[in-house]
Amino acid sequence: MEAINWGARVARVQRKNQSTRRREFKVNNKERVNRLYKQIIQRSDIPKRLKRETFESYDTSVKEGFDKKLRLIKNFTEAYPNLEDSLIYLAGNVGNGKSHLAVAAAKVIAYKQAKEINEGISEFMPAELPSGEIFLFYVNWRSELKKIRSSYRNNNTKFSAIESIQKMQRAKVLIIDDLFARTKISSSDLDDIFEIIDYRYQRDKITIITSNKFPAEYLTSLEPSDLKDYRYNPMTKEDLDLATDRIASRILHGCGERGVIEFDGPNYRITKE
Image 1: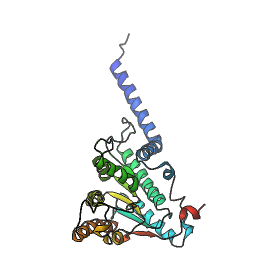
Image 2 (image 1 turned 90 degrees about the vertical axis):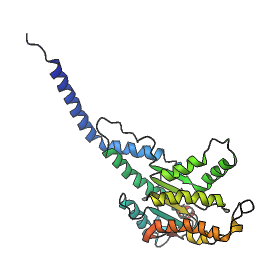
Image 3 (image 1 turned 120 degrees about the vertical axis):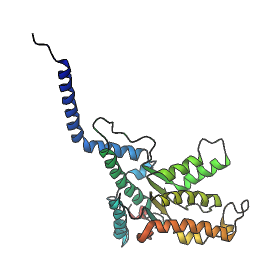
Image 4 (image 1 turned 45 degrees about the vertical axis):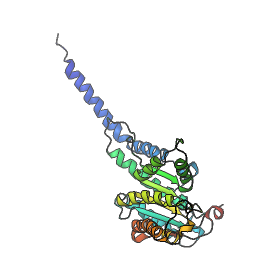
C-alpha cells in the first residue's frame, strides 16, 4: 500500500485556500472599501444631521453663481491627493449651506482615503483602519472652544484641551465648522487657533473651514479692548496685530489662488424648505 504524503496534501490544501482567499479578496474589493469608508465617517465626530449631506443634495438654485462655488469645492476634492493648496475656507452669510458643502467635500476625500487603505491590505489582513490614526475629524469651533476654556479653568475635567488641539493638528482631514463664531474672542483663543492652523499649514494637511467671518477682514479689525480676557491679560495693539496677521496670512496662503469662497445668498435652510 502506497504511503500517503501528508505534507504534500496539506500544502495543496493551503494553496487552494490561499487561491480562494485571493479570489474572494478581489470580489469583495468594493465592499471592503465601503466598510473602511464607514469606519472613517463613524470616527469623524460629524453630527448625525450633517452625515447625510452630499454634493448632489446641495441646491445651487438659491442664488445665481452658487454652481460656480460648488465647482470650486468639487475641484478641491477631485485634485486629492495631489492638492496644490491644502486649505479651503467657506465664508459668508448664515444658512448658505457652508457646513453642508464642507462635510460633502470631506466625505469624497474620505472615500478616496478608504481606497488608499484598501490598496495596502493583503488577503490575509482584516479590513480595519490603522489604530491611532485620525483620517477625518469634525469640530464645531464654538462648542469645542467652550470645552477648551472649561478645561483651562477646571483641572479636574475629563476633557483635555491639549489632547483636543493635538487631535485637530494630527487629523489627516480636519473640518473646523463656524470658526470665529463666538462674539468675543480671547488672546488664548487666538493662541489655540494659531497652533492648529500653523501646524497644519506647515505640513500641508487638508483643512476645511467654514465661518461667517472673512479671516483678514475680521482679524485685522480687532482691537485689544475687543478681547474677552483683556482686563486680566492686557495686550498691546502691536502684539495683537502680529498675532492676527500670523493667522490670517497662513489661512489665505493656504487657500492659494482659489482664495476664500464667499457665500452671500439668502438663508439656504429657509429657502429650500
